[in-house]
Image 1 (cartoon, rainbow, N blue to C red):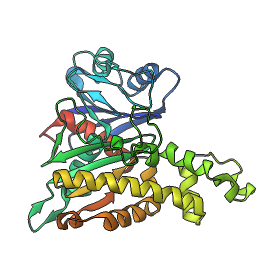
Image 2: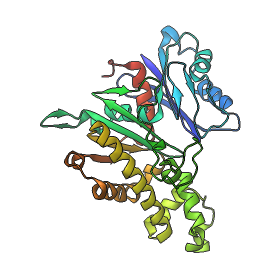
Image 3: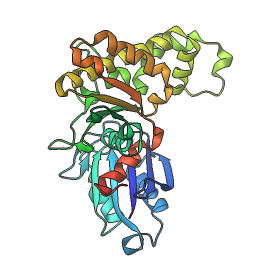
Image 4: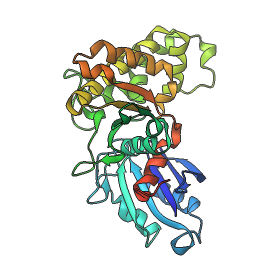
Length: 318
């Protein structure tokens, strides 16, 4: 019953061998190279050890991918992988691992599903019973979203339900690679936050020695925000306001109980979560929106892999 789980992101691909009990027996992560298809082949070839397929143990493949995607056609068009447009991801993986069933969903849908299966949300109960709806948001190179209802991913006809990163929150904002203007992703993704901070003098705001050997990325921006650098803090505030607006829009439409945030930017912890919760509390109007709970994923970088595995395991996870 071992399942191969694959997580397709904008800057890295990850894979893991997952047991029905939730035990990860092997895990591998690779940066996306110049040829994303070659990176995928290397990832699968290195982790899917010959002899594990078929009757020997490996029973299926679950994939969570950045979108947009078409689950019926098995294709993906990740905004941050320009070379993949209507890329036949399911077909490609099936050719790498013949005779195995392959299931596909969005990366944030898988993150939310993984949290429901192996994380805090699936194990929490209230007087009314288990939590019913969960919106997952991946805040990383891009921003993805997905919804789980009663333990099942709600995919929609094409698999793009919950694509919260491309809700427009600023009609006069920056153009988004998706073709729209002012999307949440143009404000709250890691690269967008860094770009805005640099345009507003971020590097001039810190001591030169502090930058020695450090990458100019969202992780270093979060470190500066934690240190109290004003422009870095403001970048996180802008991101939190945009995310808060989109989250409340989704919650108002679908009466969502809970939100879980994952992805590399979510690793900033309170630097993101505190202003995000404040933004939601400040913007929430209707009474039922005040019960909305927002937390970081309890599974870290493995949440999407657990969810991808659960796509194949279905009702069988124990």
